[in-house]
Structures are given as C-alpha cells and as structure tokens.
Amino acid sequence: MKKYENFCSALSNMQEIYKYDPPYDTVILTGLVGLFEVCFEQSWKMMKEILESHGYEDGATGSPKIILKTAYKAGMIKDEELWLRALQERNNVTHSYNERIALGIVMRAKESFYDMFRELKKEIDKNWL
Image (cartoon, rainbow, N blue to C red; front, side):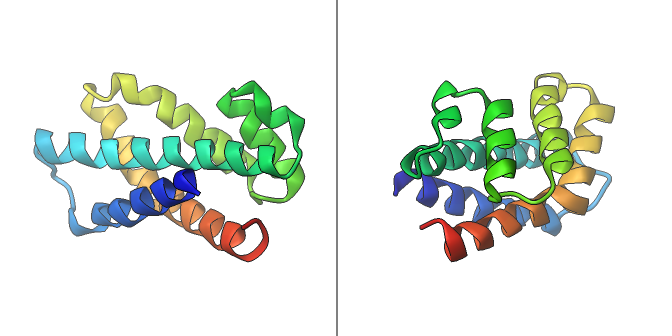
C-alpha cells in the first residue's frame, strides 16, 4: 500500500525534530515545520485510502477534516481533538514565515504530534492492514 509506505517514511523522517533545539536558524526551522507538514499530509491521505478500502463512504469526500472525523468514529484514531488541532497547525504552515507561528508548530510537533503519528502507525499495523 503506497500511501502507508509514504506515511511510514514521513514518520521516520519526522524523528529528526528531536535532533534540534532552539534557537533555530531559519533553514532549520523551515525544515522542521516541513517535516510536520509532510507527515500530516501523508497520514490523512493514508487514512483516507484505508477507510475507503474498509467501506467507509465518508472517506470518499477527500476533505481532511471529514477523514479525521471518520477515522475517529471508526476507531482508527483515539484523540479527535488533537488531530483537529494538528489539521489547524497544518493550515497555519502557510504562515510559517512568521517565526512565532513556526516555533509553535515545532513545539507542538515535539510535544504531541509526533507521538500522535506513532500511535496511528501502531493502530494501523495492528487493526487495519
């Protein structure tokens, strides 16, 4: 399953966020934000594909928010609020030229989003493949 492989690769790359501590230079900060963004994109696209393959029709819409809500109802993700917060952060990436916003994204990625992605992988491996 290509989308699963893409997600696993993005998750592996996202571990890099723990190799850096503030203060970040501009290139590092931009790269760390990018690692989060790619992992989030790959995660919801993978969820969409898996939900569709399991007959969840809501997954066909393509909207990340609908996919997250469907994944929560299906038991694929446990913390809907955290995933919706991650979606909001992904939407904020377009403003990551603002250092305050970029720092917030990286901080939350380190504090909770990386573990959120790891939990998703465990759930997919255990119950959905």
